[in-house]
Image (cartoon, rainbow, N blue to C red; front, side, top):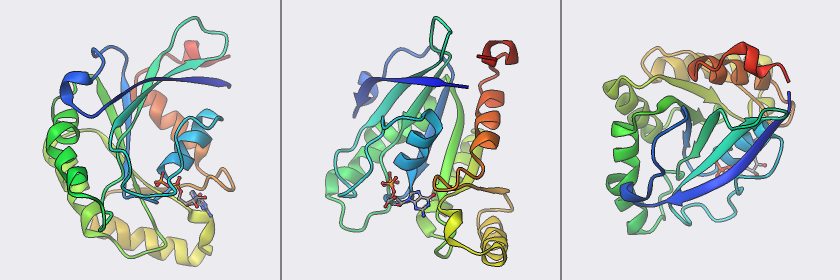
Length: 203
Ligand code: GDP
């Protein structure tokens, strides 16, 4: 399956969000968790900028996702600003109220939030807060553990159990962009969440 992704717009204010249309899949996580790498791996091209300076430009970036051979896009990916970077300037945290919280709270077409966490470090309060917030909003979400190639099977199992417990008993899905582990499964989850007809996906 080949996917064609196209940048649509960046928004740093709720009034700049594109009109709601296609189902949206949001990617959230602390700076440096591997969010851009995962988005790029899923679409097979470098649409999301990998962060050399965490806490830089704070926008929600919207990308349309189309399957090769199909005439029109079927999904939108939204790349939300990385959070939890201690030295981020003040305006970064201001962005939470201005557009991140409104997006998560009110976006009618938000079909799934993919919350990325790093299994190589202990559970983080900022991740816990995000997951609690998504639960409170009753948004469908999936917690994905990035960079899972860096852990042995044994370490990974322990870490996933600890993260699951810290994040309210939720299941954590391990992935790696290096080995592509978990990639196909994640695509399946995304398609199901967006309720895209399997007939449309056979290209
Ligand atoms: P972002 O700030 O969340 O967008 O993070 P990036 O995608 O820029 O990734 C941060 C760092 O983690 C980069 O050096 C990536 O190469 C590395 N990284 C991301 N995903 C993986 C992975 O699955 N395995 C390994 N080993 N490194 C990864």
